[in-house]
Length: 271
Image (tube, rainbow, N blue to C red):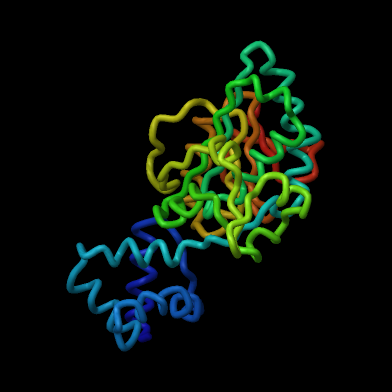
């Protein structure tokens, strides 16, 4: 892959999904795009870039973006945020929403669905009283390919083992050969939708809990500010925003304050 090819891919990703690919990440491009090269029986990545340049409307741009979007995820990832949701965030929201008996939760950049399904399992396992509530659990991503996988709720043995206790695997999944699929009632708790966080959001209800974890680390400062501004507009005044452990609103959006009594990166709208 030439420097010109790498620069073209960098520019493409920046324009389509605001992903910032730093110099030195040529190896990542080669790793992620090589399967497309093989699928099309091309000789090299340079041939792939040449085809995209000559035929921009042939669907290859979308394939490249989907291949490059990071989809690293696991069930109950990092453990502590989910403990905080179970012990503090959901009990607090349940107390404040007891008259409405409704909760709205959004997992942005959900990849193949482990995060929203972890929340669905957590709710079923620890909050049986919510079975009588109106719970809307939205999960979104910009990749149609990963959303299709997420909606199916089917995982191989390695994916199923990552972060998921054996007791929950047996309780909430059905085994089909070498794969495990979530029970239909758990899958039915999550609605999947294509949303690009770098664009204006579609009409959404005000959210009680929004998870945007390990996403903004790939964006530049202006994009981070824009995304946080959109989150502020869709979050209820006493709702919670959860970022990744290496992410912050500090020096980006003064409308948020960190919830200091919680161990991880939860934020609420400032007074």
